[in-house]
Every structure is written in C-alpha cells, then in structure tokens.
Length: 320
Image (tube, rainbow, N blue to C red; front, side, top):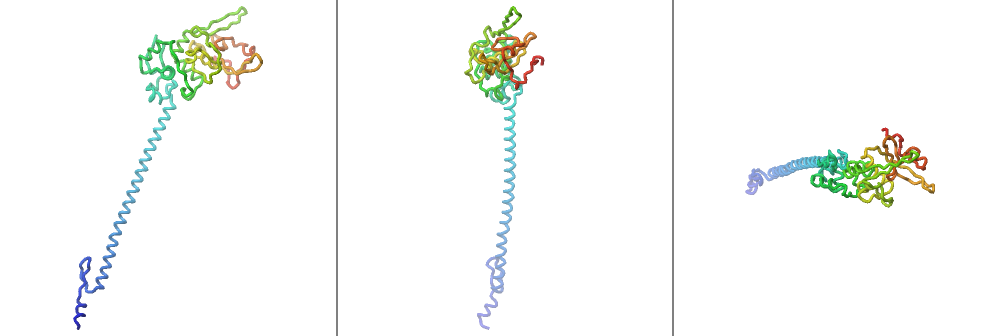
C-alpha cells in the first residue's frame, strides 16, 4: 500500500472547539455543526429570557406610574373640591366665605365676631364690616376699640358687587348694616317727628342723627351703595338707595319693615318705577318714602301708586 494512503486512513482530525479527535474529517465536520447549533441556541435563549424580563419590568413600571398618577389626580381633585367647598361656604353667615376667613383675613369662620371687644356694653365690630367696609383688622383689639370709639366720625368704603358673597342684593346689604356698629349708633340717635293735623290726619318725618334721611335726590349712580357709605357720604341718592339706607335704621329702632317695588303717577299722568318702604309702627302700617311717613290706608289709591304684581305682595306681611 502506498505511503500516502496509509497516512490518510489513520489520520485523526481534532475539533477546533472542544479538542475531540475524530477518525475522519467528515465526522469532525458533522460534530462541528453541532457546536454551531449549540452556540446559536445558547445565544438565543438568554435573549428570550432578557426580553421577557424587560417586558415584565416595563409593565410593572407602567402600572406603578398609573397608580401614582391616579393617586395624584385623586388628591388634586379632592383638594380642588375642598377649596371650592370652602369658597362657597359661609358657616357664620357674615358675608365672608370660609376660605376668605381662614386664608385671607385669618378670622373665625364660625362666628361673625372674631373680635371680642365691646364698647359701652353694646357696640361690637363684626368681621365683614371690619375688613370690607372700614379696613380694620378684627384680630387687632386696639384697632377695633379705637374704631368703635371714633363712631360716628368714621368713613365707610365703597363696596363692589364682588364684595358681597354671591353678589349684591338688597337683603344682604340690610343684613350687613344691622351688624354695623356705626349704623347701630345712628339708629340709637334717630327719631320720628310726628305731625298731627286738626282733621285727625297724622304724618311723620324720620330724622337720623338729627338730619333728614336724604339731603339730595340724585340718579347718576348705577350702583346702590350700602347704607354706611350713603350716610358717610352726604346722603345723596335715588329712591332705591334711600329705601335701602332707611330700612336698617327703622329695623334697628325696633320696627318691622318691608321693601316695596312699584310705580307712581307723575303730574303729567305718566307712570315711573319707584321704590319705597312700608313700616309697622305702633299698630299701624305706614308708607315710608324718602324719610316721610304717611298712613298706608287709602294712600296708594289717592296718589295713583301701584305695587308690582311680581313682588307677591301681602298687605298683612307684618303679621308674619
């Protein structure tokens, strides 16, 4: 046998990867292919596992983010609801929202009187009139006492519609005035001067601190001022303004009062909208117009006055 053929028959081939010997190159190549499949598989499986881990971590992260955002949104929404509730709530009915009392003026939202100062055993300054009308800090006892002692030599601020909680109304302005120590002082120095005629007819004139209720008729203002502003600024206004100023004075004097809207007949026969009061005094009902008092009985018919039907007017209102 030739020498070259003997070497080929007994030549061993070593696997370059694991070092294993094979009797032929074909066997080694077949074995080598198995290494290739194992290598591919070994690289494929970890990637598959890593991919699953990444997906799991991503899903958990998204879930946590959703939960965190949900909690934040719920907290923010709950906080906004609490703020809105405080801004719409007026627990003590003094005309200031709970929000303003707690966070703006630092007053007691459950009492109209944060200040405990009382002057002459009677006069106190409530929170609304202190901060809105007279610029007095109700937490400052010295300032409150000094203000009350200065009455009636004080000056009230102009109030805008937004200064009234929920907007201006006649009833709100009256309620604020009834707590106002300045208005209380005026009422304590007010009287009705009665005139008795020979035919038995009687009429009266309301004097507030020795002066007539209205000093000058004026229709130029588009906004009705609160009574304290009216009385500290020359007593000028039209019918609705004067009626609003008169209402708390008569009420504080101890009389029942009703605001009336209607129309009056002018000298030329035309009708004009008008505002006045009725007051129940000493067992009789009186028409109160610019501080003058006239017996209601027969007054409307004799003077051509009419009461608007949409006011649900009840002639016996004073009995309620």
